Image 1 (cartoon, rainbow, N blue to C red):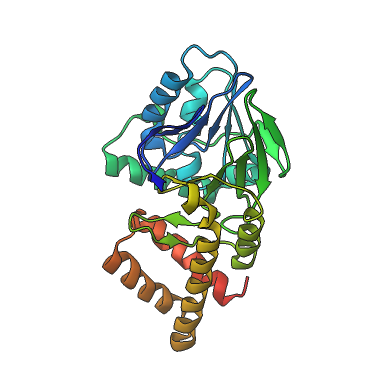
Image 2: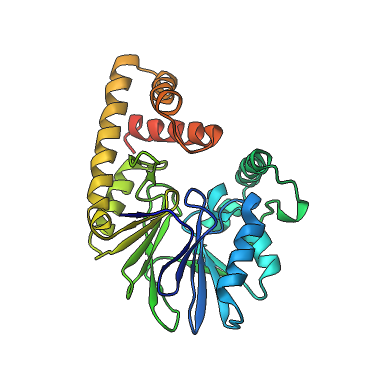
Length: 293
């Protein structure tokens, strides 16, 4: 079962905006938590929905990130500006990313791509670098008042990847550490920094009992499909690694492997990800396998 309609998932947990660029809201009696902040172009939509679901709630609110990519922290400055006392948090290495001129320029330009694609040009919503209020290492637990959220360090997609597990509701928020769920139902592996750490993190996630998996792109996987999703993701990951290795043995060129997979998967089959972001990610994955990282 897959949930693709924005709105209430279960109890006080909501998917906001759309299943391809969602953020998630956990409404609590002691603490509200927003998971990720999506892209800058959808900032006003995220904000409107957050205000609707929170209503008159006056408890503190945290915005916790799964990682530092453009489509996960894009509207954070906008939300922080418009939600009183909003605190941002994530793995401590995100702070280094936000201090890197090259990284900030890339995050800003990729968000600009989305703004252009969606016809949004409000300066107030554009991405700007910010600081983390809460620096995580993994293992932290947040009490919302009606549930507890565990922060889990899961490197592999990026060096700063975190997953979050809502214990009572058995919901795992994975970012892209378990891959991207395409409209076809295929899982696209996303081991950008290390396929070895990515696999280790997937095996760590397998140890948790889940009824729901809220992925970064593709909506929410529920019930029986959720219970074998990490195994399915591991299978797709090993298949993709094997494919890269076969192509590299044939071509002896990272660029040639990237070109072939890009043609086979993005052009022929169709991937929902914006092409420039897809190409950057594909180059990183091929390089990780070739360099045996």
